[in-house]
Length: 212
Ligand code: ATP
Ligand code: MG
Image 1 (cartoon, rainbow, N blue to C red):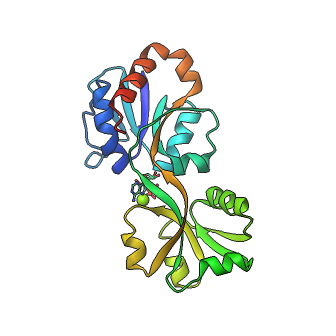
Image 2: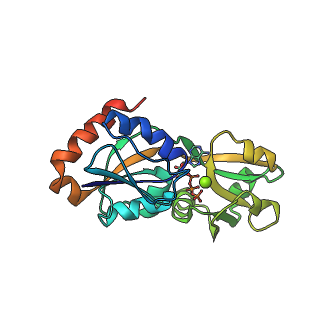
């Protein structure tokens, strides 16, 4: 049995065509089904539906053989125990630093000010500001980072941005790109050795179906 960990929403939707290419079709839609384990057309393949940030953990411990996770999530997780053979080029966005429209980020950085930064991506933010030599106090949030600078919780946020419409609607501006983000296929390292006969053809099919 091969178990594939996916999250609902954009990752599930954008992964379906790639799974199709590997001959795998989900028999139920996770948006309407309450099931957390979804059968597929193949007796030897099942899907499990987990929170996006939990995908690397399920795969790391071998509870899932394969998974699809954003680079944002993988960087926070650290990637231990995971083989990351393929960028699927889906769920694309950018990890950015954003501030209020009236905040002069460049000057604050030049003056060596200590910045308060609110984010869900604490490790990514710590690494980014350390590499720039900017001192920061990090404030961990779990959602709606955009609110933090508006109510004085922080000077800046580190968050994913795609169109920028949410920033704009909240009088925020992106001031720095940290990294381009897309989702990767992740594979449990032991699974790849023990189940290579089943997994390798799936990896090849995925690779052939990835759009550049
Ligand atoms: P939750 O919504 O349950 O808190 P989440 O925000 O991590 O979790 P999603 O919003 O489904 O879950 O995001 C899943 C992945 O999709 C993210 O880890 C990221 O890689 C990518 N992603 C997030 N926001 C966008 C976006 N606006 N455009 C494109 N890709 C995105
Ligand atoms: Mg989300």
